[in-house]
Length: 217
Length: 109
Image (cartoon, rainbow over all chains, first blue to last red; front, side, top):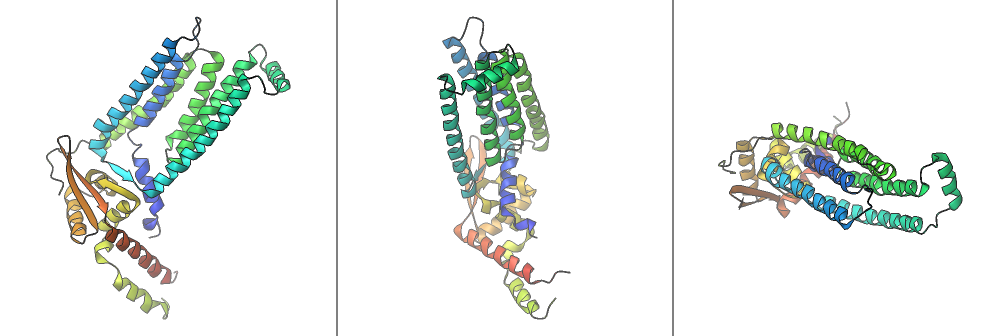
């Protein structure tokens, strides 16, 4: 009986059910793929074209996500507006992510200005041999941008796949910057997209499209 | 069952709101209690009730002024939004309090 009145669990279950379609996994996987294709530094260096193409690809990925939610998920699963508990959680998430980003921006700023401990930099350089320590630091900071942020998002939004995706995204960003080639991040992006596609297939089987003419009451 | 607790537990049981007490309606109200609103399809999927069954229970809850039903069209599809009324929220909250009280008063076996 106690379980029946566990309202937090009922709400959490309702929230988690909105991720069953796998569309968020696919979207985040596509973001990694877009980054790996357009952010890696070509031999000719960065160009505004790189940035423009990456933004265009991000927009396309988001449009796919939005269209999937509208035309696949909503007709099958229905629509829900969550209440005060969820809004409070989202507000807390926004606040914490804002603080995390501020700290990270400060670290990046310090790194860029060359104010981080030079002795530590030399030690790390010795450990990694010939690799440029500056790139290593940028890769580590980039990775730290993505990983904890994504984990916080997963925690506050009850998005269970988010923890797995956070780890993979973090590795993808690190490899993308450190190795400067798109193959590994592309593979990691696929590892995020694949479970999403499987979830989508299971979702389509579990929730067939209801009869359009069915009277609601 | 202890002699002192039984009469109190039974009297509280008798006071339970029967409109809420029915398991299917209890599931519907519990779900609508934790969200702002949900449409018919979402409630049906979450509670596992059939279309007709859910429709019947929603009609009863609407007649008791516990649920507000808003019908509209999304594109060409009919859409029915459901939300608990303030009376429905109070009734559910009181039901949960009474039920917890009843269960606490029963001795452990």
